[in-house]
Length: 199
Length: 185
Image (cartoon, rainbow over all chains, first blue to last red; front, side, top):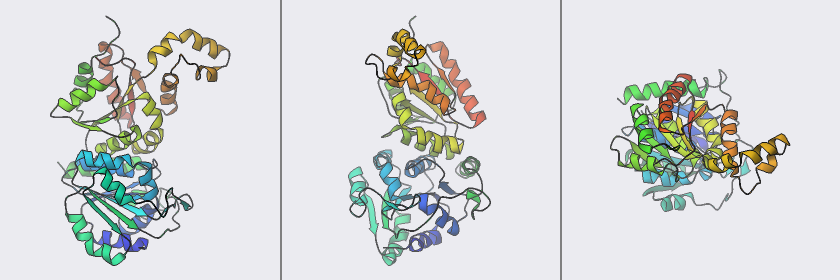
């Protein structure tokens, strides 16, 4: 099982101009690694809708990679999105599921199927051709370049230790710029960035 | 002419407003819109697995600079409440929602009974009556509760309201809805 740092640090080191959509217990840890114009925290937002939001961005910006750092509880709330992603035919979307087996933000209650659910089998059943599962940091680090560079859509399940992250509170107390303003302000700013760069 | 709206008139109005994508879950009322989108080379159609997903995908498209329209039935609208609130609304995404109103005809034909129930303070009874499809009763009140402005499109002349409604959504920076009480022809 990876620590959160062992999952996030290798990603942050390799990240260049990809859109990164985070949600739930990954939001604040990622914000300690990254304060990029193309970071989008799907936080203080709707439950379980990070992957489908990321799909929309991937469809709108086909020349740009989109990474979604989703939770396992969040993924369970919208499993149908895996089918939609494959059907949409996007090759620039990578779904990472941070499998900590709990609803961490609300107090680490176990998710349904904790310890037994097989997300990779579900993703394969939805039609994903490129799937990966990791429970060791060295193996994750070794394969990450190839995961990030090859055409997708790609599904990656990473077993990560449960933590004790609390919900974010948008405002000056948060570290990253994208957590210091409202979701609406950041969304508008990000749309401006994406439409200018992807013209 | 009876109350009808043609799908082509609606589709043309959306095209005139720079629509790039249709995202949604089809039903009998909106099937023709999906067919028109599937056949149009400049519009991308994305059929999704649930209505809340449609709102999130559309919100992502909007961040990426596109102009999506969400097409769903009113039952699915109720399902998508958290996505509408937490994604589209929180993001300030001016999504246009086309919502087919299942149960509208039954609601109109039961208007007398509904008024009796309301006068007696028995609205909960109305929700259980066999002859009434309760989802129609809840559609407009729910949109009002969620602060989503809506207008009804009953005849082709109403199609002109689409542009005004979407323009208002863009100006205000939040979603707005067009209600479709009748099957698009």
